[in-house]
Image 1 (cartoon, rainbow, N blue to C red):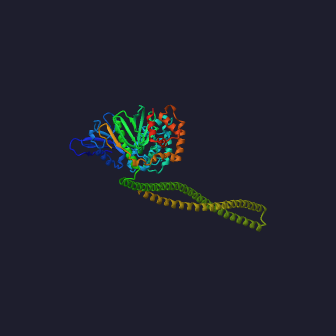
Image 2: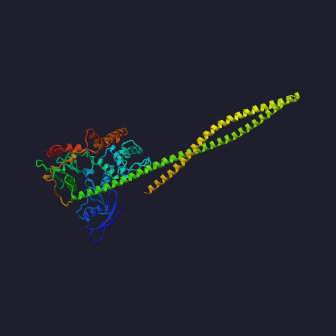
Image 3: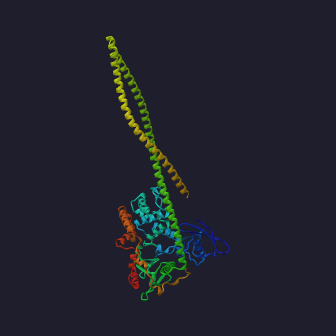
Length: 587
């Protein structure tokens, strides 16, 4: 998407600006007096974003450092690389503690989802191999919706970027084998809305140790090289070789104020008995960035522990209403899909039944033809029997007549008498032959009569089957027509000395919900069991030579039973002074 809007009120030459969000590219024209806030406001208005407190405009300054645009200053007065157009990225600067509780708008959810997904795929956020498979399945649901084997055929995911290259290179698995593992999870997300899939992705991702953490190189008073992690929950200290597992933690509610002078950064605890927590950074600009991140994260941390403002309440109410509408629309679509699938199934059943009926009709026609042939043969046989009987009667009459003549003419000559007797014997032999023929014809006729009775019965059945088939075919056509009809249906100034008040005494004891949290995977025993099984399966295919340092650190944490929140409880244990002492003694 591209938009072109002039921002500013002064006449003069316009400067082109390009702002890239996670899923769009926006173009604006600014003037010499345009402030960062004016540009920011135009961007959020263009994309329809109201949860603006998480986001900022990021750019690369003249020295090559990633920097956040100061909203209260004129854009052209900031350390921008002079290029045309000026390049900015619209990105999340602060992260929610719990996406399911805090994110209100779908547009906010999508921006976080895309940014976090990119951070995981680029290995900016470390993710265990088995978890990348689960996350990939949610990513597929968010992009394509439900998995359909007839649509998403083998090789469908071959060109999709689904997991970090580190994971692909570490296992001796083909693209098809990875696809099979992802699809086995994806197929279980049936009927999950795309926004819900993004939410599930983020609920898993937010439990990753490096999620939402900004890392800065620091040194303690001893000069030990360490990492400072700034995130939504507080400040954490990491050893130089391990950005996965913090060693010391300070929640925002324990910090009274923060300040820096040049490269020295000072954190004053709320505990008056504890001395200041001091560290050093390589460059002044790093302290400025740390200060800005501390201010924003602290404000959001405290805001979450207070009642929602009227504006946020209204946003939540509107989001609930929109959500209900989406759910209702989703349910309507699911009903239509179910009705369509049922109609298609019924249609297939009708088609199968039609084939069966056609076969029955053909069989009935054959039986009818055979019956008619049998009847014709019977009629012919009856006719032949009748003729044979008539012939027999005639011959018997002739023999009888000859016998009478023989009896009457006793006086006839012997030769004539012999001749007559021979004729009588011949005629009697013929009669015997005719009788045998009549008897055979009679037996054949009885057999044919039985066949005719059977043929008539089968003819009746065939006629009835033909009638039924014709009737059902008409009914099918009506149902098909009904189916067809249904288918129609905080900004900093220049200088080197700053101090910001954070937590007052009245908020020193706000609840630290985070230390009692469980990871989303730990709360779902079924997913936990399946991920353990997947991990065991993947281990057999692992190339030990390509295991990274962070893989080793993760495996050590897993063996020790540590996760993000258990570690948090551990590193916040003890009073503030003890943790400061621990920091100063780190080497």
